[in-house]
Image (tube, rainbow, N blue to C red):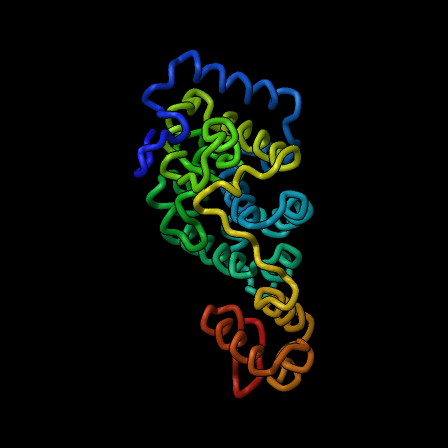
Length: 285
């Protein structure tokens, strides 16, 4: 693989031999056999439960999702129960996961699955990718883990593994370069287990060495949560879940941030369908 400056980059997947592919797979599976993570969503083949877990895992640490996943599934055990639930109930169950727009998207997805797919999670990348809150990566994860289909996707742990193994001296590694290797090394007989193994290996690498994802062309450092718009949004929802409707002035005072900034964020949340405004009073939509 050659870059625009003529320097060799990583490994050309076309030159990988069967022995090299098997050796790589053997290393990953060997680690997985001894150190696989015991995660509740890996104990089910229910496509809806797996869909819920994958949306929860977007930008949220595994440990936090473990705490909330089981509770959420008990409250909303199937697609129809989530689709008909009031948004306030869904947001209450989501509290602690952050990025609350995902809860709204998940509920809308449940509504679409109920009406357009007879309550069955679709098993195609095209149909899944069109659902709210589900891009191609999450769609691939659902297809691999719920249906054991040999789809191609890259997420943060998988990216870490391939950069560590195949791009040892390179920086600004693109996902396009990695995807060629994902395809070349995919265990098509057991994609579910293979992707679980890659993710667990990648999780280990993050703890053991300097994060290889820093050498990804797509790497972005997460902004500080303190004083962020994300924190203010979460505070607004927490307040409104406890008491609503609330007048604008009362809500702005309770949030404890600059009034103009709170009002701007409130307007965004109204536009997204998370919050409702009626004559200057706000409540959960």
